[in-house]
Length: 140
Image (cartoon, rainbow, N blue to C red; front, side, top):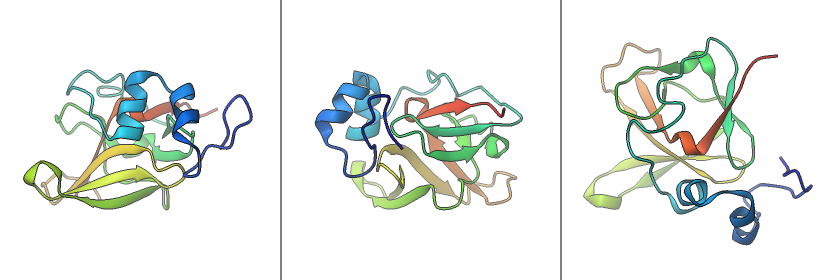
């Protein structure tokens, strides 16, 4: 992926470039592993029938719209990602074991994935994603 200025955006992109391309809130979430307040994100209660949610940093496709569901957690939730789009990393911050999810292409922090919570979804997973980490692209 590349920016409007023709800069290639991936894991090799310098933090100086990210600081120029992202606003302060986006930078905090995507590059510093921040979290937006629950219930405040623009995609929390948005349920499109078709389209793709892409990484706000590099625009790599991450989630198909039809995998989004209402988990009631306060952040956008998906039961599965596009194959190969999301990396998982063990996160032991805050005294608990969680699984962080990042964009495979640029390494941007998306949120966390939780398993076996009892949601009636095909994967029994909840990808809890910050709205500031993604953008919606409707189907054409």
